[in-house]
Amino acid sequence: MSDLTTESRNDATMHLDEMTIKEILETMNDEDQKVPQEIRKSIPNLTKVIEITTQQFRAGGRIIYMGAGTSGRLGVLDAAECVPTFNTSSDEVIGLIAGGQKAMTMAVEGAEDSAPLAAEDLQHIHLNEKDVVIGIAASGHTPYVIGGLQYANDVGAHTISIACNTDAKISKVANNSIEVNVGPEILTGSTRLKSGTAQKLILNMISTVTMVGVGKVYDNLMVDVKATNQKLIDRSIRIIQDICDISQQQSQQLYKSADQNLKIAIVMHMCDISKVEATKRLEDNNHIIKQAIKN
Image (tube, rainbow, N blue to C red; front, side, top):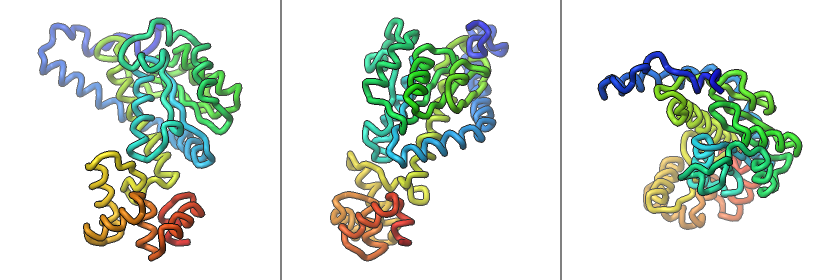
């Protein structure tokens, strides 16, 4: 582990405790700017990965993130945020963290070192060959993640790894790998910093672009947003108003007529058809609005 970039010392912060607040902040900012530059190098691999997640999700497969500690928490966070943003169910994008739910707020002793625990977690959700398992580990060596990827391979699921070191162990286990070498952390070994930022940006890319690909976006608007509060209801009405070029009052009425389903409301108006007809058109066109309107 001492040979890993994520565990090495950063020359720019060898005397971190002697620096002023301003100096630390400027150094952190300088280091953080390296993250997106490194991620850009992985765009070809990310493209292949998202082609797989889009294809499998469209075919009824699930996206399953697996990780321990910060990596696991970021996977759980991204999965949770897909629910309101893209109206996915909690069973379509899943975040698994070593040690379970309580590991979200505190360390669970030994959990990340247990490969069998990962297999048990995947068995519990009935992993199948349609699913995509994405193992996340800053070090690239986490046994829980390796165990999960190995079990997923045995089941025949698609496997992807995300690491913040080169030549990572998890890269050798996964069908497709993403390695982003962000360099040593300003605080040695604290992978919640640059490594965590890199993982968050990559997960943003995977989930967002996948959902664009399966028709949950119209232009750059969230047309599958789940309106769980007044803010999201207001946003939904504005989206209908914007796409259909109608008044707010008309948009509200259309939203109500469509039982608060944005996609149905838009197709109803654009094609001048009933809710039943709009629903069928969407079903016949992979729930992609632009295809439903054309066909």
